[in-house]
Length: 264
Length: 264
DNA sequence: CGGTATATTGACTCCACTCAACACCAGTGG
DNA sequence: CCACTGGTGTTGAGTGGAGTCAATATACCG
Image 1 (cartoon, helix red, strand yellow):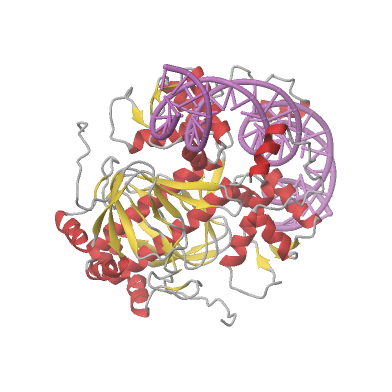
Image 2 (cartoon, rainbow over the protein chains, first blue to last red):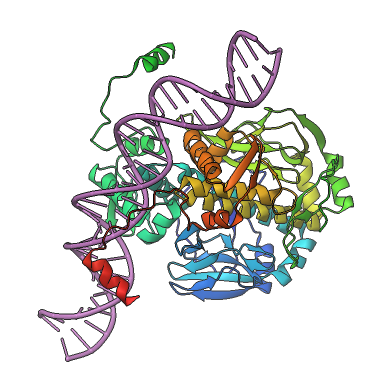
């Protein structure tokens, strides 16, 4: 697959993995030109300058959004004012999850973005009529579920290094597939990233520094990085590597542990 | 809403929150009798004794499952052999998420269960034809996304007590709504619960013991609990309560902090 | 009953959080 | 040009709490 430019489109575009597709797993456009046109007919383009709040949690939800350009984060604000980022959305993604007619989270453009706003009032009849289109939306929803699983896997780790590495891996895979040593775009601020992987800003910064110091990754600038040592990076992702030079001191194993070890 | 018995059905049954529904948020059955019958026609009932592996990660995915009775856990096995539970599924839920024709996770019945196995080969044409049915599935997928958000909120907390409390809250809300001081079913083992909330078994056990010792909750037996002190339980969920009698010592604030505090 | 799996409790270590200070940068205005 | 500011990141020191290993207790199932 030749690396090609991300085309700037003014049509709705939804990417994902079709159900039937048994091929290798790159996400492809799920919509036919007719379907895209049908969505364009009922939706409107909205420009989202950096920092735009697309919607607030609990506000009336009348539309879903299809991002055609940029990056949008969705996040929860907890009772204690901290907030956690539930996901980052890229071109081809949908966002605007609601419950009982109200959005369940906040959405904010973290870089200049463009989205299609699709009113539910018009979308629902369209989906009712066009089963094939509804199935495409279902595919995209399944995509979201898989994305959430990845996020949960990140949050379930308890080492800052591993969490950060998993985030970088995800960004690598989200972007257009390029060469093995290419530079990957890191669109979000450190704070956003930290809130996504469930760490404090400081802990994440330390993890980042450690990975740089040990020459596993390298940041070109604040928003561009590349993996330098793929082998150790993979070990890190697998959870079987501590780059800290301070090896856990090999304290003498007690008797019971030795017995158990002999068996295996 | 009168508390009523969970009916044992041999028909597919999918519960969730319809898109249009502006009413209060109890989950309702999403399928009309005709739709249920259509699904029954293409699916088969499978009995799942406790401990049954419904499918394995990476095995060929030819069906989705609609649970009509019991509880099924879905989980990932990590490279280092630990495993994390991605979700618990109850009657009315669907599971069987796949990618490229292969399941992405494991599924296991944790109590005796009954499910409908619905082959994708037959389901897809059905959804293509029946847009309304596809929309119901979309509703259910949205339900899954909301469920995942709740899970992520649990994992994002860093206090064991809070995580455990949030799990209990979720179980309370999942079950049939009853009186305020009623007993709630705790279907999973401690190990499963710990893997769901991202803690070790020991840490979770300690959290559970602490909540019992401080009379916030009470376990009738290993699989039934009730919340005793609702006020403190809510504070705990909100993240604004430390039941540990060891209050953080109010060490003298340094000069800078005092200055900042005066401003606010 | 006995035997195994599951659950609780204890002791100790280590890592992420907290508070704090500092570095860096862009924009603003003198 | 510098000084001031606020926002954003990095680094440092100290503490608490969850992980780890281990022993014990309880429940489950023949």
